[in-house]
Length: 149
Image (cartoon, rainbow, N blue to C red; front, top):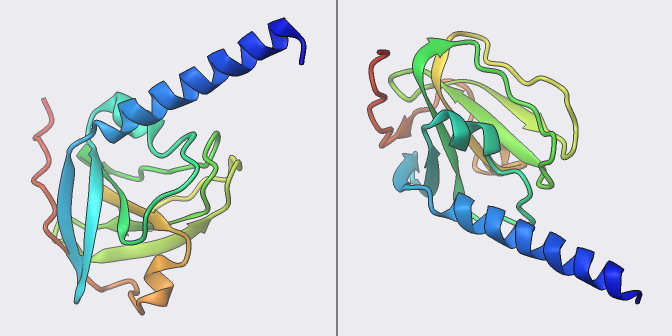
């Protein structure tokens, strides 16, 4: 391998490792979906929400990312720079699932809630279906979002 190419590969690997470490520094909450326990990283800042699960290569079973917004709105998601196939549940303030969407990696298709929401929970693709969790089911343990300033 050419020496310059080796350097570029090493720099790229370092950048990806740094991004993954920065993402894993997010706070974690324990959620429930019926009898199932979920460990979810909390993306509550604009930067954390924008980064989401980008660049990750895997996600352990029963873990996910909870997106917390200051205001209820039609917060849409896409999968640019996201390598994992995911399912997203859009959640009402009381934790009830409004709708669930499956999302393909590396796409820019919009996935939106059917009603204004403050929360969204991303899990490995098919997680909700495999557990029999459908719209109307409740996710417990949601953190209280900050009021809009």
